[in-house]
Amino acid sequence: MRKLYYLMKKNMSEAKYREQKNGNELEGLQFASVELDLTEAETGVITHLDAKTDAKASLGKLAELGAQGFSLVSVVPNGASSAVAFLQRPIQTERELHFIRNAFLLEDALQISADDLPKVVDAIEVDDLIIALKPASDPLRKAFFDALPEKASLALQEQIEFLMPKSLRAAEAAQERVLQKVKGLLRAGEIRLKSEVSSGN
Image (cartoon, rainbow, N blue to C red; front, side, top):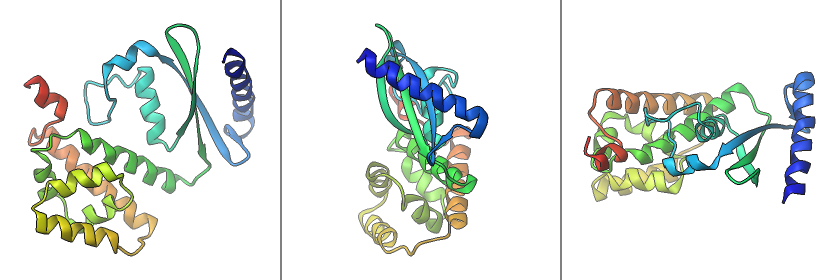
């Protein structure tokens, strides 16, 4: 395992050298690595909706890279209490990266209290919700479906399924409007995170 770590570290060092020359790009891919403090794994889920998250922590950095379109390749042990995570992403346009980032951030809606999700649905234009949920994960879709009465839920599922492809610009704009609505509701205290509900805040 040590040999694998040093081999990958060597490759990453070579990629880092190329970063000075070519923006950390190698054969159509961009690379990143994060040294993880394994004791932080006990802090729980890292999300962009949780104001208590320390963005400078290694897990916060990992979440930040995920929002930038990086995917985890592997995690290699580095001593008793640390490890190194290696990530990569295809080279993409700024608009594509922004779309990926918004889709990643929307997944944080899973941290909203289930009792408050109907308020989110009521605050969002139906067309925006349909577009935003089209590329979403099954758990996130289910959370929104469950927040609706059965008839409305089935109608929403059908509209998402048969939604015609939208331009990247239109999809990005819909995502942005949904995110702004969620942030506004959180700031106003109209919705809460599951962590706040469980702690009794």
